[in-house]
Length: 541
Ligand code: ADP
Image 1 (cartoon, rainbow, N blue to C red):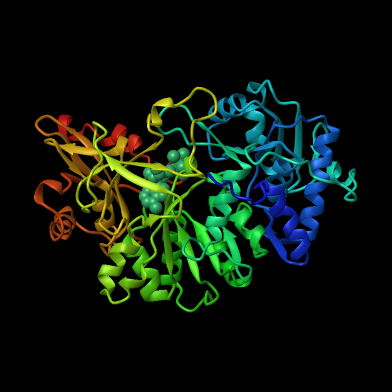
Image 2 (cartoon, rainbow, N blue to C red):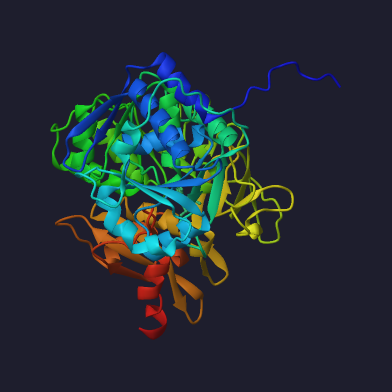
């Protein structure tokens, strides 16, 4: 064997922070405050403030490896924690502000958070679970919506007390933990995923590569996806590494606020879950020509399935390109991106949409396979459904603590819990989450396929298909539908619409009209709630 002769240079987030100061000191980070005014910082300032945060943590006696939690919207101070906390050897733990206080108390205790950086506007939420978390020693409040009251450390004062000069970030091992993020716990307790500096750095390289997200220096990146949700899909680090301009929405996530800021700051790459974009599409349709989004090169959509009708609506009516991606907290989170391959240029628009609305094919270094219930590896024929398993350098090897060992196979793969088909080209198509699968008379019915088809009906804004209990067939599909304003359709019309594309036994037994579909804290349809509300209708009804 001949050993390679290259340096074992550590892959740490510290380099990303230092690089921004060295090469892009004047490039901007823009944050929208609760009052909608904009705060502008340069990367030189973000670097200096990250140094001050690191020094403040030293002064507070916060040891290496300690968890420093954030309970914050997307803004510059959250970015400073994303950088200064891991670069100084501590571990940032992003708390999801949409969770119930009981869940937050559980998660913060489980992670043994010692320091919490919290937005002033979120203090009422924090105070609801603070007492549960015995490990908390310091609470630092960022005054997003006004001055910080007595009894708390004031983020700005804490930083101002520290010098920006002469600080050298500690040398870290690339395998040290950098961040902890909890899954939303729709199946059992939330589980902690511990990203290392190495995994995050490699994930950042991948996010910047042209055929993945292609984040580049000339971009103006707008993560609408929260920084407490799967590291905002890695965009903050990818943007800082590239020196691109970064725009943060603060707490304003409604369609009008988002679009207004996109137009004003000439955003090139925006990212968020489908709900946000469904609202934006409706707004653009209703107000043609009002917003100039000509700077936008791509809109990254993931977290749950982007309906094809939405992808096509943006392309055809507004000349906006959607980039559909799939991932999981356990994957840092990026796994697959639905780009077309070069040999697909001649396909029809419909065929192209078929690929672009799938979950895409694996990013470099992510490996995929799907298996049946006995673990047998299934063929990539575009039809056979099985559970997706993945592995790669930014995929979790285990959870924090002793949780969820059954999600990892003996031969080194992570079981995603997503039921998929894989086609010969390697494109993944999610048919369901395994816990949401509908099995009627022994046959699997894809709720996602039915939902996508329902959402292409002109009267329907959103649709969720879920399992109803049935005496003869065990389960039958039921559909919950939300109509667009001033639009409606009968059950027969919806049934006829679906019958064009699906076998008869796939068609939902009932269409239930609802005002809105219940969602999880990260914007996914909450089918357990739908089943609880309507699942017994066929048996009892
Ligand atoms: P959770 O904590 O709920 O698991 P994640 O954000 O990590 O939160 O969710 C990962 C899951 O979200 C995936 O396993 C998949 O079911 C779903 N998901 C993510 N992206 C997509 C997508 N593009 N299409 C369909 N489902 C998606």
